[in-house]
Image 1: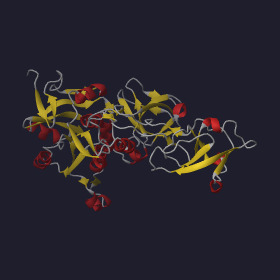
Image 2 (image 1 turned 30 degrees about the horizontal axis):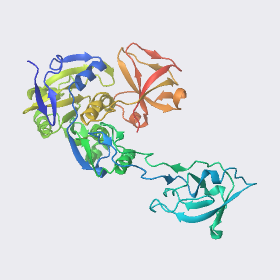
Image 3 (image 1 turned 120 degrees about the vertical axis):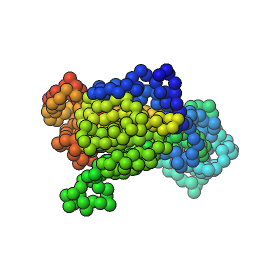
Image 4 (image 1 turned 180 degrees about the horizontal axis):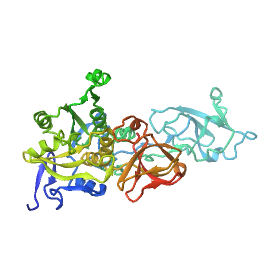
Amino acid sequence: MGPSSLFYGLFAVPLVTRSFEFRTADWLPLHEAAERIMAGVTPLRGERVLLSDSLGRALAEDLVADATLPPWNNSGMDGFAVRAKDFKGASKESPIRLAVIRHVRAGDAPGGPEVAQGQAVRIMTGAPVPPGADSVVRVEDTDAELESGTVQIFSDRDTGANVRPAGQDMRPGEKLLGRGHTIAPGTVGVLASAGQARVLVHGRPCTAVLTTGDELRGLDQFQDVRSGIGIPDSNGPMISAMVTAAGASVMQLGPSSDDEIDLRHWIDKAADCDALITIGGASMGDADLVKRVLDGMGYRSAFWRVRMRPGSPVGFGWIPRGDRLQPVFSLPGNPTSAFVTFELLVRPFLLQLGGHRDIERRRIVCRTEEVIRAPARLTYFLRVQLSGTGEHARVRLTGPQGSGLVSGLGRADGLAIIEEDVLTVEEGGEVTVMLIGG
């Protein structure tokens, strides 16, 4: 097949971006699996949304200021606007008295009579500094005798101070934020200050999450868990929450039974989504039917199994959906395996698809408070709790590291990364930790 491309949703996905894309690989190193997933991913097309609906989205254009902010010199303190030369040398022993000619509040129009020699203007924080004044003396350094029409100044430490110049925050033509910036609450403040009632952001990827397994019980069936005849479907809510935290919208499906017709029903419901995540049912057991159903739909596999733990039985590929290809992530059914493989392989994909510039978790080097062992020559990702900061940051395992255990995920601040060529990290040894907390 020669190089060509199909439209996948609102972005183009090359059918043959690299020669390996439709040649299934097994037991890949993690970095190569990630490369196969990320090859050809282009952010979704931009759309304008209300500022109030933009939180968590990625800017689809640079934000450029078209106004001066603040629009005039304004006071950074409650105090008195004066000329610096008029209170030079002021002290408690030798105070300087000035005539208070008027009072200026935030919201008053700029301008007015100029402050002349021997004069002062009572001023509030944010109010426009009157012409002629170049300093604001904080009220604490005065006697503030407004009734007498004068003020005594007891210090000259505010010479030339507490005047916020016009344009200090932004000026027309200045780039404030770049394309791909993730909109956080502070960003909303910048956008509002720049007059952006509607914001151009990248589309939010629609992501279907399908859990599988006859043994799974939703929250409405938790009595079966209490009775010992089922296990809770923790993966569905957990992975759906992770999708939302990655800035995507979620369609939560299932849980599906271990039945090919039921599986196909749920997978077909996800046809219009930008990506499909299946959880469980993708290993080598007789009841692991997901891959069989996908193969029957023309599934094109990029890889199957990765040299990591937990989460080695993870796969990625595409289903033909008419004139486009839908990416499919097949995550393991054990909760920690699903969590770790999502963090490492799915989250960066969704963030890049959503146009976000920063798609990688922050990593720091810590020292371990206990011996950590990695029995096989795989890349391990172990749940750890963090204490201290900077060069004094230390980590300890959250407890047993079995991939079927859930409780340790709630205590984990990060994932300690143990590379393939490392079998033991001694107490006090260095280890790189990928932070996963909020």
